[in-house]
Length: 282
Image (cartoon, rainbow, N blue to C red):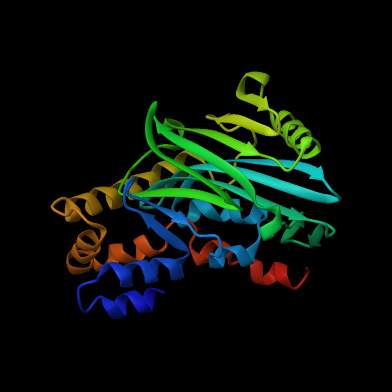
C-alpha cells in the first residue's frame, strides 16, 4: 500500500484514490468525526492475536494501555481485549475479539501461551465505545465487528488521560456470564461493570492487568516525546487544510516522511513480525 501511495504522490490525491489506499491499509475514514476505523476484512484479520503483539507495540511507537479479558465459552478459549492510547501519530482505541479451540503453544525460548484467531463472521458481536479525553468526548464507534477501532491523526494523548466507555452484547446468557467472570478475574469491580440482559457496559480507565514488559516509565517518556513531535509537525503542516485530501497532499508535499507514519496507522505490519514463527506451530 505504501508504494501505491507514493505512486499517487506524484499527483494530487483525490478522494477515491485515498479511500482505496487506506482500504489496502485496512481502514476507512469517517469524515464527520475525522477518524479512521478498521474495516471488517482488514488484512490484520489473518494474523490472530497473542501476547507477543502487545509486547511489540511500545518499541514500534505505540504507548497504549491494554486489558486482555480471558474466558471460556462454547468449547473455546476467548480473548476480548481493550486498548487505548497513543498509536505513534494518532490517538486511538480498540476492542478486539479472538477465540481458539487449539492447544496452547510452547515454542522454547520464544512463546509459551495461547494463540487466538480473529473470530469468524458468525461470531462477530455488536459493540460500541465512546472514547473520552480528560472527560470530553473525542469520538464514538459502534458496529457488529471483530475489531472495533477509531484513530484520530495528530491528536496527542497520554493513555492515562483517556477513558473508554464500552458496551458489548454477547451471544447469550452463558457467554455474558463467562465474560463478566473474566472481567472480575482481571480485577474489574462491580462498579466498573454493569449488566443489562446479555449486554455489558464497561469503563476502561486505568488498566487492571499487568501491562507489557516493554512499557517502562523511561521508554514511555522517550517514545511519547517523539510522538508529540510527530503530532505537532502534522498539525503544523495541515493547519490550513480542511479536507483529508488537502491534509494528505500537504503532508506529501512538505513532510513526505510523515506520510509513512500515517499509513502505519493503528497496527502496522511490523507488529505481526512474530507471526511467521508462530504459524509453523499452529
